[in-house]
Image (tube, rainbow, N blue to C red):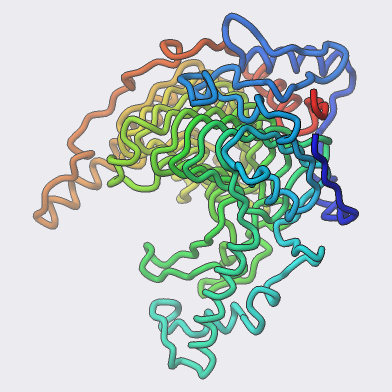
Length: 509
């Protein structure tokens, strides 16, 4: 085994303390809940080994036990097992960004099986000399207030001539964005297992991507989303919108990915604390939390936590991308926590997506990430059924609080006419998610038909469809799994067994 260490491991203990695991009162409680949650994401024929006197112990040889990541095969073998076949020379222990990037190159053979253990917390803005870079390091002199002042008509039109510094701000923004991309981007190649060694292992401010990669496993990590100091204002995006550049974790044209016991969040930098823009609203400095794009396929996200974020999880990047995404984006979300996720939990185009035993939590009164349902005049939702999506939902628990909390927060249609649900609950009571999805689709369809009639144009193809709960596929035809069938069981399993720090990772085992 090769091992690299660094004395520079002093980063962001406050973030780790805030996101540390909530422990139940007794070991027996841990054991019973952990076992239930493990069974929820296990094949019908077996379950992960569980230590009934503590936390389950994971191995570098583990493969995705169920979900779409367990289906099919890669050149490394059936299912998704990352770098489980790595020889000792391809096992790395890292604690700095430079070490992590070196480990992904894997001694000059980046696609060969490799295990990368993360010890402590790695900062994506950490320079090779240990300095933590900030906005002025990437683009000295850049000022977002000056940048905004160069848009005329309250943000509608950019002008280099508005002020003497406008051309400079435009150039500095691009310079800073490109420099930041080079610094914080961590590309995980094929046949990689990325494991947090400790309860506090993780990354802050890094952009984790899988680009044309196959067979990647990410487990037991806390990951804080990068802050894009050079986010772009786009006047032509709707009524104008901020478009940050950097996702927290994303996959592009990749396959066989297993993300398990991971926390992804905005952490210490909620949007509410960002500078205010033209409309006196916060500048958006985060992009996607966990995005899967451009034909990514065979993915399982299990026992993880997606928290405190706006654009949470986008599957498919455009209705027009049938050539890339059609027949792909097969993804399973199993036993995860979605908490204070204002939209896209997930939003799906094209994909055959299994949403099983997840716990969705939100409030219209949250100070940083309020979820305002469409019925209340807002745009927040948990599950989004986009164009040609085929979502198969089972036994998910939704808890939504605040004045006039209503079921429309659970699922909404974005041109999607196919949605199936069995056994889900809203605030502890059975809920008809199919009726909610159908109501949303019919409303959007009526608007599209009326707009076409008014403009004298053809009705969009999607609006010529009828809603159906027949999504044309079933998870049980592709893989075995078990379910928890009460809202309390789902809540307890997810709250006590999801996220990092509840599984034991033993180096080299």
